[in-house]
Amino acid sequence: MLDTIRFEIRASYAFVERNINLFKRYMGWEVVWFAYSLATTLSVAYIGKAMEYIGNARVDTNYVVLYLIIGTLIWRFLAFLFHDISEMVQWERWEGTIEYTLMAPIHRITHMLGQTMFALIHGTVFTLAIAGVTVLFFDLSLERANLLAAFLVLLAGSLSFIGMGITASVLPLLFPERGVQMTNVAEAVLLLFSGIYYPIQVLPRWMQVLARLSPATYVLSAMRAALLEGVDTATLLPTVEGLLGAGIALIAVGVWAFRRAELYAKRTGKLKRNG
Amino acid sequence: MVLTRSYNTVRDVAHLTTVPWAVEVKRLSKVFRSRRRGSVLPLRQGETEFIYALRDVSFRIRPGEIFGVLGPNGSGKSTLIRVLSTLIIPDAGWARVFGYDVVRGEMQVKRLINRVSVEASFFKKLSPVENLLYGARLYGLSGKEAKARIYQILRRLGIRESAYEHPMEEMSRGMQQKVAIARAFLSEPMLLLLDEPTTGLDPRSKREVQELVLELRATHHVTVILTTHDMMEADALCDRVAILDEGRIVALDTPTGLKARVAPDPARVSMDDVFMALTGKPWDDEEAA
Image 1: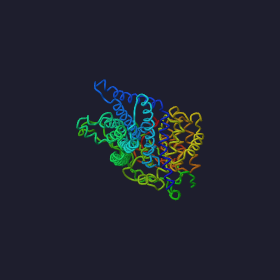
Image 2: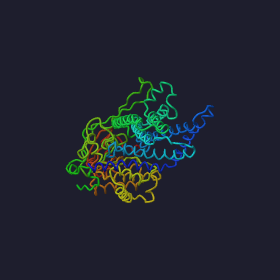
Image 3: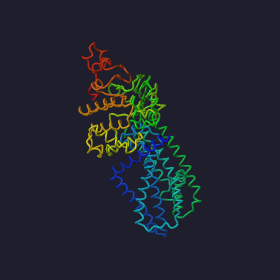
Image 4: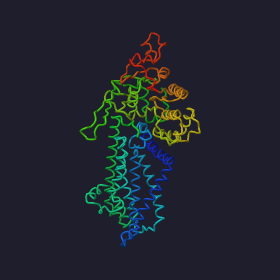
């Protein structure tokens, strides 16, 4: 039993180490992506700062800027999780290594765990780096923030994005060419509907209905409550519990969907196609 | 049989030393469905085309045997290898590796096999050492153990040390294929599936790979299934050869036995002649290239 656990842990680390090595080899692209993400974050934050000029009315500029920065940074982190995990199959299809990975004597959950650990490290480091540079541009105050509650909300909310990432990773198994396109569309839909840069109340009613189905809506809303209003942990606990429940359910759906898709690909011979 | 493999802790060694057959395949069939592109409207989709990759294939392989599968493109060789690699689920029949069913005992089978395919299939930006380290960890080796073994195998394969840390994409195809073989050896498989491992290699690299296969069998008693287009390779390496044509085994025997089927003096017959006589088709060198 202990040998099996040691075996699976080593195998899980294989994905972390491989992705770190890939990260180093593609460092140029990471720098490009960092510069682009930083420019986007700062641009969005400056929109907040320009509100008084644009609207010709008094607004609490600092509040608006912080509101927007929280949105961009949290979205950056969650999108990283979703994207890195959803690449579980896609990247290996491009490289042509997918058959070798699926042939290895490891449980699929070990594979997913390794990919998720890397996604968490990657997303955290990247987001903190952007946050670190962003604060240099603005005079931001988090005096009222309840950091513990914010951390709990983010932790619970991350589970849903891990689950959705696993489900999205299935798409390139089912549709070798179109799967990647579908994953990007799913990410864009989440961005539009989840109130990343605005309260969902500004959306048309039918979009608000869909927004309530997105876990990101609840993560963003609770994060803003914790960081901007300093809402206490107990008040946010029901949201944390809801996010935990949704996260566990979405991970279970993702694992189930991946297993079904792998069997389907093995029955139809779709594993061998690259690209 | 001596089993010195480092990760035998997750293999049932007692079971492995008692099974009489390394591979058993019984009435194995696989059909692929391919839809020809038609209209985008759901009711006007194109016709479904059926591709019979394997038809009623049966054979058994003893531990330590080098078993050749010979056939032109599209004959079903790679499908057979993929079924044994647990990458394709057969429609009918069954296949067992050291007594474990490739579908029901998938995990046990995976612990016993490794494969080299015609495409080297690596992370092209990663170096040979990084790629092999990833492969070794998937088979449960610790970093220290894996690195020691990686350098040993790379040296044995004649890969120059200056290439160890450079991206794979900077290596020649022959060198990449050698690294692919190193990856398969790292896990010390009991069944090595070689799917056209020498296709596209220069004569020297080809000979080195062939020598390595023979050495591996001699030192580790590994069982090998080798699919190839190369008649001479099959003749030189294989204890027995199955000729696969349109998904069917049309003949299975030792190379000498196959030759004896088509001419009274086997020494005067090539495997090309055997293929032609048994399938009724000429061996198409262009297709095989």
